[in-house]
Image (cartoon, rainbow, N blue to C red; front, side, top):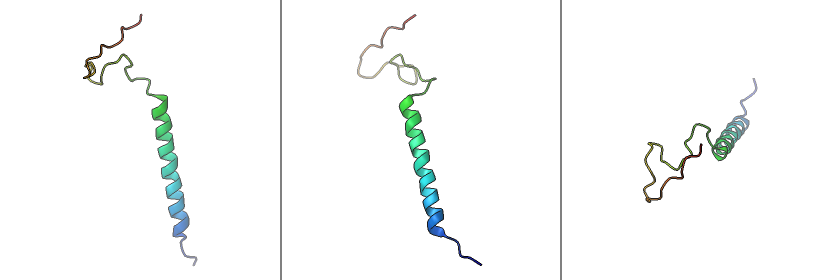
Length: 58
């Protein structure tokens, strides 16, 4: 019986992890469509630096 090639398995696992990480970075760079883009934080508050949020466009 042939012995398992652990080096090959490890390499495939590393490549899959790298591919997954690159996909995640790509998605993050594209931005999420459901993310509010009006200058408010996630909870709807204005930024802590006191800068006003841009006026909403109709």
